[in-house]
Image: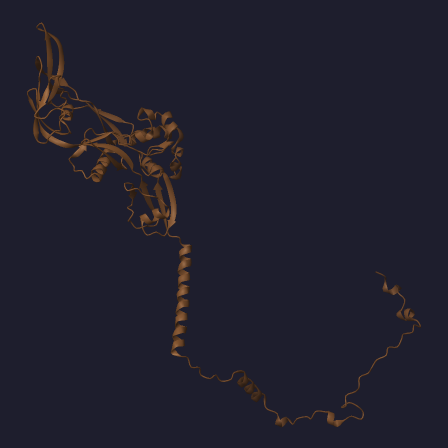
Length: 435
């Protein structure tokens, strides 16, 4: 920027410059201002006393802005129409409120345990059956649902669905199929009686240890009577269909020429009658002999799983009849043809512990809904043990897969797995916070 003191004065810059004149058209003066002026061109000045007051001007302004309203006549018809519109609007508002409330709150929290899975859902259904329909879970006629399908829904409820499986049954010679959710004989027998309308006199001919899909089950009506054989009269109460089954259960064998009366050996066993065994032999010899009963295995709920205790056996006495064949006056062969019990033998009892860590039952509930006979392509049993793991930890000492082993046997194998890997080997073990 230049210093102002160094600049020449403006007069020196202008010098003798000539500026052109600019012509301007001047407007004609107002008649009131012209010389001489016209006095009539000025507006008259009003007298102050003739002017209205400020209060009068304000009142007049308000009156014009708010003219008085004429009363409007409304017909009763229009009044009802307006009331209906108001009510409809109010109902719409309330309906919208409840709709929004319903969308924001989907309902109760429910967990469904089915087919080895846990399904968590929120539902507005009113019953257990309703929530199962919502999740498209089909329930078979003989499947077990707990609580019942008619039970009302409660928040944080757990619904268990246990699938039934078919079992072929021979009931007094008639083939039937029973659907059950039970692997224990007692539960299966109750299902069979219920489905086939059987009475309490129908029991197992030979009770199985466990019921599965491939079990061969025979159910028979109990019969009572007296068996006359080899000089003894034995009262019986046994599940038998034929005389042959009675003899088999009583330990009586027939020789090649022996027979029974009044009913043949292959005939149906009547109730409340006597059956006589007739011996046809060269010579029959009866002697008293000691015998022992087969040992049995029973659960002990006060003994930890994996431990056992044994009570000693006591021998019994049987009257054994032999068919003796003599050649040239000498005995050549001897064959026992019957053995009738005179004194019952007491079997040796091996008690196995069933007292388990309660966490195993909780893991089983989580893994399979507590179904200890669960069977899948890779995981079996109540604890869902992988097949190769079952084999690797000695499970075949008890059964080919976990689903065919008892609860106690599964827990024994599970304890072996836990000692190496802890409860974290099970997804449900981690979920339940076990270590």
